[in-house]
Length: 129
Length: 484
View 1 (cartoon, rainbow over the protein chains, first blue to last red):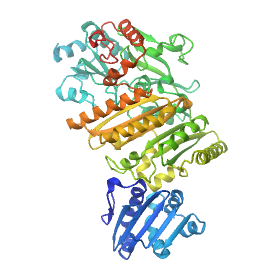
View 2: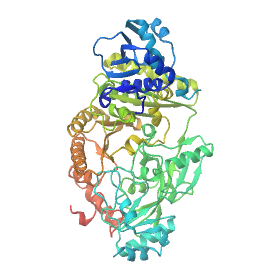
View 3: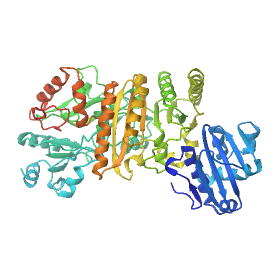
View 4: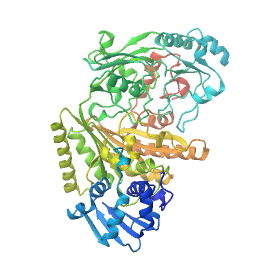
């Protein structure tokens, strides 16, 4: 899988399908100047659970690593069904999903919301631009 | 007889420029993607029409030269190799679409016509007709897939592709040309009925009973509204339960369950070996079509209701379905599943170059047990458990395939894949499944289980139709030199 040099997929051979899909989207966002700039200002770990699958995404001053499962302390944890997280990736606002009860956020909600743009498929990726 | 002499002989039938005897060409034609031992062809003849084919058969018969037909050479049974030497008949350039009859929903085609070619032609003519399309590359042959009784994306509704054949034109080993089905009498090859069904003499016989030069194939209506959905399930029991129930509802054109390694291979992981226990075990694509949006919506509602029922009754963990467009936006890697025919390059162009399977048809009631045992075998041999399962013919039976990619140039890995396949085959035969496009090595293991007399009858038919044994010898153990 091609991705940004600032993205690390830990044990890629053992990564879940969710992890591979998310890594692809995060990598595409990191490859953009605005994404790279945003990542360089972020630090901390985010836990993501979609359906039964979980990931830990570690933002470390421009380098983002994706690890299978939830491990260690996280600043925030986002949890929802696979479908609800897919809708966020496709552009549905995370706040709307949160208010609708489709997604729960534990820990620091501001950190979670700050990380959300990395999980969003950009319009030009979708061939809509 | 040396190659030059053979070239001279066949030059009476085909221009010398299309009779190839150089080492490089013969090397290419001696191999395929599989682990089957290479063939040893003495020459390759590129046939362009029935007249040439008939003359070639006559020369081969007179000189007892084996003939092995080949088109794309992508079947995973090693069936287009030439284990006993002789001539490979390359039929790729015999590729005319002779007729498309929209009123009777038929096409008459030559062996080299590919799925891409016919699909494009139907589009070009703006016809609302289609053909069953397999999960094999677009350049593969429709005739070969039908004659080998493969399957396509409408086999859930209409059965294996052998059943799509409405009639054949065949050159027998005697040199005589015959037609089967209604085509033997009528100018329109409308059906295999109502004459004695001689078409069956050529389906799954792997070219041992004659050389098919034309095929009339059924086309099916292509409905204007269609939807491809993906459903993720966390365990195979839920997958198969859903598959069986869905097949019976007559909602779908196709249902295909692919096990977890497939998704990762799309992302370039050649041999995913470890499954996250929390990730879905199968992703199942479901194709639906309808004449109107209202009908399609009703089908989707019925699908959702069924999913809810399986969740409730069986406790199955099933994610909400999403359509292929959504999936491709999120993961462009899945574009390979967006439209058929498709080339699943993670299989056909895998880094090791080798691709094989134990591909079987069998009772869907035993999918779970066969998959359990197959996964154990594949993992023990170090292969990711790539499984494809699809119901066929309304759910009367299904296809269950265990697929391996391997390093074709690594003898130890080739040996490993052979041993793995033998174990898989013995297991699956025990479960009552039967390999289709059956490779020679699998025939050896299948025959001891065949009903007494059946194989004798097959040998008798072969002797009757091809007494000199020139037609694709080495298949089904049909000839005296094969032993009993």
